Figure 1: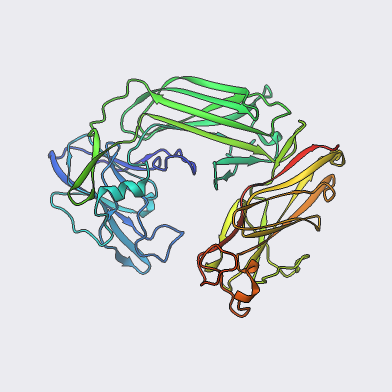
Figure 2: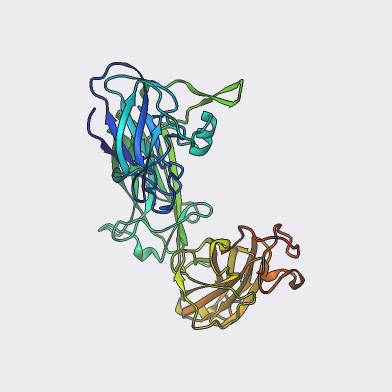
Length: 469
């Protein structure tokens, strides 16, 4: 069996996650049924280092088709604080020389011990999905490897802009001056094309860039062949116009005369004992990627939309049920991207509010324009201050805040502070014990209850601007 080689990465939060990993091409073996096992460090995930065997995010594939449905061995501690377990195929698979076994998504080379083939079924652990249906449910649509495209806007160094993924995934930039440009003055976006499958694939590809008003600003297309386990980068040039507060990029890829991968037509699953059903495999030969880039700085059009989402926010938590303004200089502010929902019940001492703050710039003609502050959703109460002046308040789960801030803003730098309170802070005081306040177990604001997994947070924040009347 050959040494493992790498599968290329082509990932983004909203794309297929199975594009990075390792693969083995089988050498001369006796054809027949084998169980497949992959020994891996089961607490390798840095987010949960205390777990002995967190739910495996990785999958084992045979010629691009998933064969492992969350079946594992029991974990074994091989050294203090280091645990290993074995991912296992759900059933015996008929293997032959030339077949390819891959492991993708979540297991890195440092966390892999060995790949093994067994003639007899290995010992199963307690963490085992009883049906393939559960495996499909946990994997989403990622039960098969496939060609894909990843379209992204990039900055002057070629790095993708930060992502906002609470709703429709999008990117945020300061202005068009931050975009990657060519020598002719055109902006440049990247489109990554990847083929994690073990065979070459010929594809038709098209990538369109549109302005905010859906006019086509740039296009790249063609027919090309993607080698096995390969990734290529296409440059998509587009023209900038001064009246666009955002741009979008949309990439499509589809195989031409796709090969037969030898997969069964469908996966047979058992929802309940005695009830079996066939579920077609996801299409591995076509994919679509789309994302929008919002510009923070105002543009020269009549109606301006200035995004305030992104990584320029800071947050400071407070246990006060009525957070004061101005806030204490003893508060500790930390970087916090917005949109965000913070889980308060895991924090000690238990906070009930938060101060979100950031600065934003307005142009010299700001005195000739009207401005509104918009927050698409707050949980559970928010009071907004611009340059220390209270400009608006809203309460209620997932309510929208929309308020005029024209009299509070000025040309140049402005400071925005949003004071957010949880459901306890806005409950009827008769139901709140000050020494140990707990929030409602329901979403009725005045209902008594017990503490739960409640949140505070902000969704999308932006400014709307029009010429002053």
